[in-house]
Image 1 (cartoon, rainbow, N blue to C red):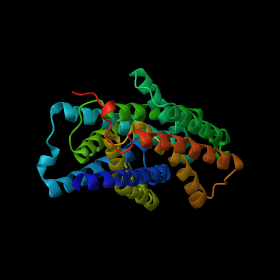
Image 2: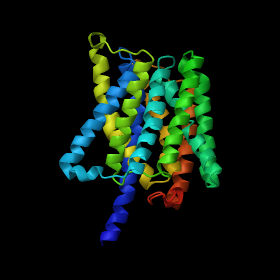
Image 3: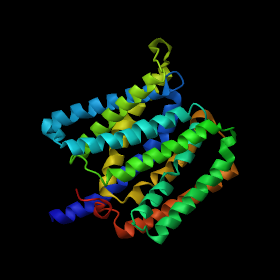
Image 4: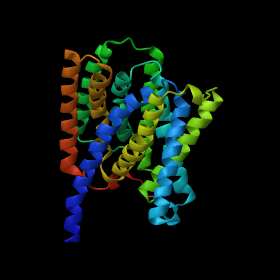
Length: 313
């Protein structure tokens, strides 16, 4: 009975975590945009992730004691590397890019992540299913259709280049997370990643001359930062890291297709952006791509740890 109960709960946990990542990370693009109105992009990220790491560490110590952070030097190094790639390189450059492009367009361009992941899988001779590949390509076609419209705003070349590099950094971090030594406790791993990633953002921001003027920070930006810490980081990022160890990477990566839809909807509701026919059509194409990937992976190994995607070390 215990095994059956676990089998029943696991798919529910996977879909619940996916729903969190879908909705929460779609909203963080707008949150970042509001936060950096009066905060430096990299230092805002440093405050976000270091604060979230300390809160999560405190929670773990209260619940499980210091034993929750028992890990080898190699496991700590693996989590630190992933944190630098995901947060310093990925999330940090998203914030920098949003100084030049809209949050909606940033979300659309980050949808290139699944394509990178498929390329990496081919490199290590892990051939994705034909329908998985088709879903990725269809989804990217929808993203391209939306990007051609651009929300009616002019996009800076600098912002586009930066966001694509951010997507590559995030993709590498996601890909490596299941192939290098990582802490056994996923929450402890998230703590290390956020702490190291946040420290990397602070060092990078200060080294390029960013300075935080507390008196100049608006209440609106502070509220956005609090949301990003409590919801975007603690809830969203931890759910994402759990998914990386319990669901296929090609399924997890579908968040990149849903996030732009959430971002567009929030743009309409919060800042009165117009929904064009191109946005409607592109959004429908993206959903078709998501359906192809999800249905294919569900039939194979949706709720199983991705043992085939991990290197034994």
